[in-house]
Image (tube, rainbow over all chains, first blue to last red; front, side, top):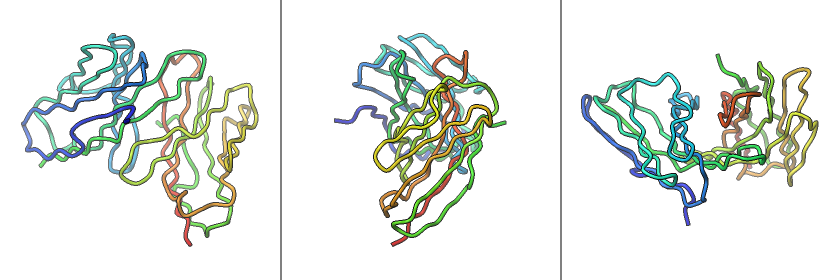
Length: 114
Length: 112
């Protein structure tokens, strides 16, 4: 069973479109994240939710809107897509505690904006 | 700028050799973690070392942490072709909550 699953895995879309990436985790974790990895493999956190509440919101354009309907899901909606949004988006989750916050990643969603 | 900078950016070795990757960071940390990313896949957690630990082992992996130098190293012994991947260090900053900041990564290639 996949622990953190995200869909779609590949997404090719035109500039200006709106798209969503869905994420679900079955690990019982209380914290979920979205990370963006660019073409140079630089991985940067975008958002973090703890028990459905926004905890971290890095400097991300407000065209990106995360939504957490429950603590097992964190979806990412992107409005008015731009060429620079092309990247791999990783959903992840963790359990907040003394274990050191090990993060479990999904397999990534490859977004290409043309 | 990046909290974690890794060195080297790329490393190519022969199967059976040891591979060493280094990570430097800038500010005080709670712990440092190493992750592996195979091509086209997500990141997988390898090992975590806390700020009060100096060395940790897990199978063929050995991690060291020097908080005075703000650096860590990951040693993979007796490398295998299957170890070919990108390796990232990630730091959990003091007072940073549950945020992990990732380094720039080292691309390791193990050749037969």
